[in-house]
Image (tube, rainbow, N blue to C red; front, side):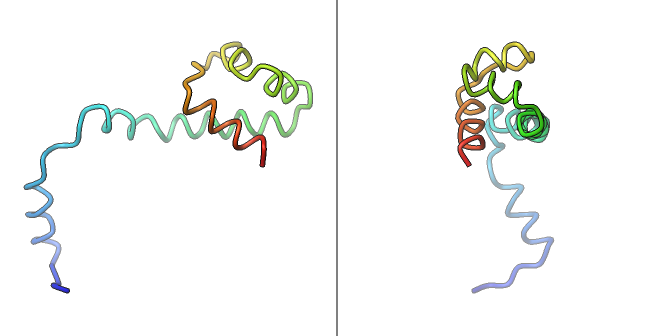
Length: 83
């Protein structure tokens, strides 16, 4: 395998086309979404009533919390609650 120094790797990366705008936006939003997801899970673990609401109707509970129930978020939360 060839060894590349940092300068060469930088040159190669500059030749790549820019990432699609949607990818960039998603990457920027991911840390905030992850924090929100972790907070909802923490609350569900600590509060039985909140957990029951989430399990009974996850989408409605998310809307009540001011979170848009995006399909990927809903699926991620369902996986977290099943674990």
